[in-house]
Length: 310
Image 1 (cartoon, rainbow, N blue to C red):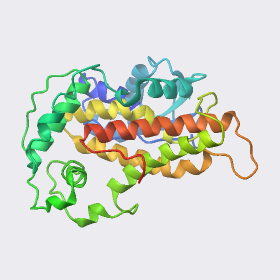
Image 2 (image 1 turned 45 degrees about the horizontal axis):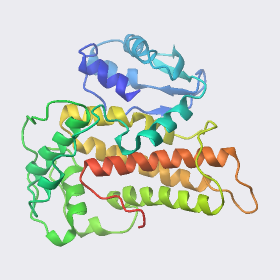
Image 3 (image 1 turned 90 degrees about the vertical axis):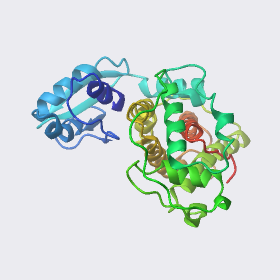
Image 4 (image 1 turned 180 degrees about the horizontal axis):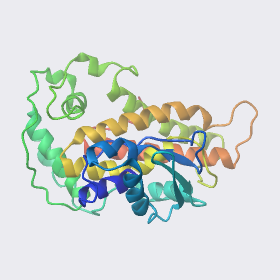
């Protein structure tokens, strides 16, 4: 969905800024379908068009997605989406098959700068920002020449914080904002977004190990009702917008949202007590593994490690 919106903006069909995310929820009273979104209402003002006109434009583009069975417009411009049978399962299979390359349009070559980045022990924010943006552009098969103003300078920081913490601090806030680089980045607590993202990834790996001990594996056979699926589906659009706008912070914020959803979802994955593993558990595990793949791939693009144990 986010990808369709960003494409409409990029193609000049929708004269509005590309959103960082698209809020999706179960339909409210008077709604229909599997999911509903108010994105047309959010974009109408900036686009200078009535919300229903924006909704019609987005519906025309989103209906091309084979995973969507139908889209209805209700109220002032809500989009009500009915998914095709098996669409979520197909999404999860795609993520698990493509691995950390899920969401990449280019198939090779985008990691060529990895060794070069390690040459400098203490990168400036502008250099790191440009190199990360170039890596994002390569995932989309785009020209890696980075243009635009340099991001705000970072304050002096202690190299003892480690590469991962410093890179997160320098990349996770918008270019015009001054990053906060301090020892809070080392806190192993969910108030620290870097810890939350890496911890959520480690939890997905722990779920897989524990499922193996219980004698079952991941298989996306059933539909799972969770917002996590929508965040996984949005990942390609986030990569595209982060690359196009030269904004690695968009990817960082998406990883934070995905991590929060993982931590809320993880407790439903494994059987409890004397419960036997069933198709529902295998499907939830597959969704958790797909989310872990998104987290690992996103962290890699930011130049940050994704530890399996944390």
